[in-house]
Length: 249
Ligand SMILES: Nc1ncnc2c1ncn2[C@@H]1O[C@H](COP(=O)(O)OP(=O)(O)OP(=O)(O)O)[C@@H](O)[C@H]1O
Ligand SMILES: [Mg+2]
Image (cartoon, rainbow, N blue to C red; front, side, top):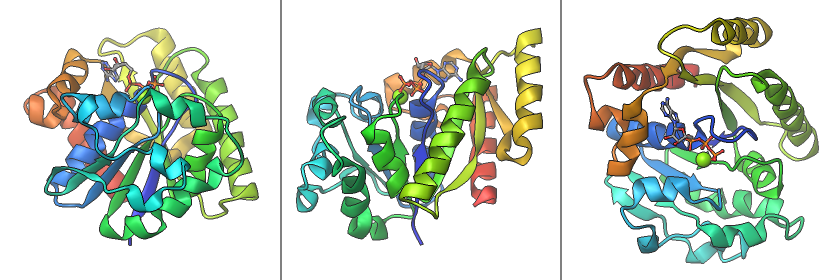
């Protein structure tokens, strides 16, 4: 059974794309068939996978234009394919109610070829993210231990509840991943983490990802952290994240 997962948080810059990229690569390297979808007009995930994003051959925009047959996921390697995005996706953002259903319908047949479909979401509460929540079985929520993170999560949980009530009752939360955690402890960081673990208990992954330059550098080389610097502390953390991700399923 394939699982469709939205990596989502309306807050910008918390690590959605970084985690989608590393999870997709990591799961593919473990032998799972993975489809990574860039559902963000910024196209960051597409740029991480493709040296030159102009070589993108499968465009998520075709889902929203009802051209489902046109989409042939682009092979990155044996177990990994992508459907990319670029700035042209932005014109779809608020183009109508159909948008909310296109992704789900388009994936209906396609998903059978994959164990995991992982969708990188954009920082917003707009239609493109409703489309992703509608298409998904699970949500994975990256966050960083920074002021306002907790308020942001409350809003996101409300949105997920609404999505369940209105169009996708089977939607489940896989968990919350703390990213960009400072290597050197800070009072504010510790406090936010402890409140988060109190409020969301089991939903918060045990694994945390520290802030680190290898995490920033590796996608520039189209490599996961594990490929780029397998001996780093961060590679160990991404390995733990993969294990915990699979355990939680
Ligand atoms: N653990 C980390 N250590 C260092 N840099 C990180 C880490 N995680 C993410 N970054 C960097 O922070 C920036 C934001 O990360 P990313 O693009 O993954 O966030 P995002 O949530 O996808 O952002 P957006 O909301 O704009 O889509 C990027 O430059 C990324 O390389
Ligand atoms: Mg992103």
